[in-house]
Picture 1: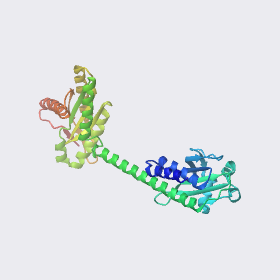
Picture 2: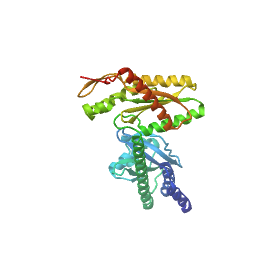
Picture 3: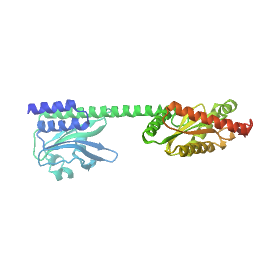
Picture 4: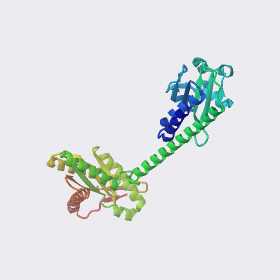
Length: 343
């Protein structure tokens, strides 16, 4: 028996998961107590339900994994409330338990599994249909096993919290705080992925730069608070106009970028890129009612190109050049008129 316990102890020491820890512990508990079934449960006090997570069955008493029972009728509830960890005459002590009667339980032993704050989150238990004398060594092992499981669960929760925190920080690193859109870094990563894909499948990537012309003027004349509100409003409009097949990002200084897959035919891809740019520019035109001012905006400048076999920097530069060509053409038509109309 000692060799078997030693082997199980090695499994416990090497356990990387809750299941990997619990199963050898249940085996060891069965050996030390002589109980027919040993099992681990979780308790949902909000639903008043107890669930068997893992079990080991060697005799007639069978506790199935996944079994759910109402908390009010369980022996674990009675044990916690009475302080009785081991009972060898269940029928006499807890004869009102229907669950115990159905399973013909005679001997019961358990220890609570607790969270770091002391709250009970489950139990490790053993039952038998026969009267079994539980030694002091077995009782001590039951408590030690419960503590080991508690510590493992807390460690897993901590790891999960740290993982979620790291994922949140990673997402935040790719999001612009003001607009809620992906930022320049996110756009560079996405554009890199799209360019790699286009090299493999022969498609083109539509890349657009959208410049909120007059944004600096608005900040200078009306303050950065109004500028921020306008930027947020534009981001919302642009997001609504952006193709579902691409990514819109705010890349700073009143500029947005879009990248998405377009046709494998260059002529068609170029038209699609120009159409996306026109749609984005048109989305910014019109009236804006902000917290402290109402204004009319003649629209952002936007240029779109279809690219392939370029670096990320080259693709963005090409789209930027196209945006400036559009801007120069509009300036010639507008003849120096302001892009703003204030109320």
